[in-house]
Amino acid sequence: MHIPKGYRFAAAQAGFKKVGKYDLGAIVSDVPAVAAGVFTTNKFKAAPVLQCREMLADGRKMSGFLVNSGQANACTGDQGRANCRETLNMVARALGVPADELLPASTGVIGAQFDLSKWEAAMPALVKSLETGTAELVARAIMTTDTVHKLAHASFEMPSGEVRLLGMCKGAGMISPNMATMLSFILCDADISTEAWQTMLADCVNLTINRITVDGDMSTNDCVMALANGASGVAIESEDDYVTLRKHLLAVLEELAYKIVMDAEGGTKVAFIQVSGARSDGDAEKVARAVGNSPLVKTALFGSDPNWGRIICAAGYSGAEFNPDDLVLKIGGILVFRNGTPEPGDMDGLLKPIMKERDIVIHINVGDGPGSSLLLASDLSRDYVSINADYRS
Image (cartoon, rainbow, N blue to C red; front, side, top):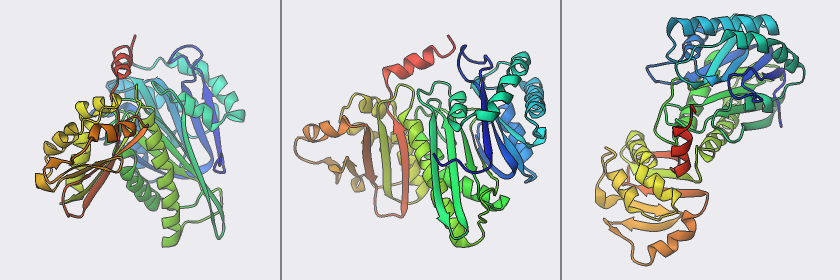
């Protein structure tokens, strides 16, 4: 794995989750790094989200991330904000990093206050782990209902040297833009300005993490944060430099987005819902989201049932403006519907093998307009209901 230069990792078992599970992690940059972040639009923003937004507002450099799973520290009021700041102070003292240069993130059950005694007890293990800790350990520490840890990396050569990118995330349920119950951390060793890094991150997140859905729910804690510490000695200065870095950052986020949907709670399928020919990108997105969030479409995917009528129905109520006679539907490249009627032939027989695949491409063209959108959606299974019914038990 291509680990960017100048970063160290630590993880500990603090007891926020079940005994024997890593649930506290830290990533430390050897030098203060340019920082950027994109956060949930939920009105009920968790304490760490509010803290990070404040810290990033003045554009100062940051030295790392602090993340816990098991407790979201959301809907916890002033006490939750105070607890968030105290955990930063506690970890800062232990790791030798300024508290105002650590960006916090939390995930887990909403409403419970932190047990600060558990944080204090975990400090020796966290400090020790910083000597030998790995990115994989931190990726495991941020998991909740995830079944696998999620990492993606990239490296590329510039005239002045190699640049490396590493991304990690957690997320399997309560997934729908603007973002989801997901935390994502991006590390880079290029030298880039704060403004360019923030613009690049927001742009790439909008094309990837904000284009996935599992269940249509949006969390209180979602965040994607990124550091660029310049340890590679490679400066991103020209437009070509920017385009090259953006291409690789986009690829890392695309891989993470796919892994979230692939690991959806109880999920067995990933639908690539492609919409084209809309009057605008906004209308195309309406169609894609209506299809991707439809329980009827999602359960048909789970059952490998080529019930294409559910897709047409969802497109029709999406709120997008288009002529129904213009809609053309293809599933797995097979023409299914056009001119207001289904294509002749044994459609169920043709689609049956496609519907059994893990990845299924659904292409919906609604006209000859310039608007397009891509959404990755999971199916909806019996296990999803069981997982969320038993989440706190």
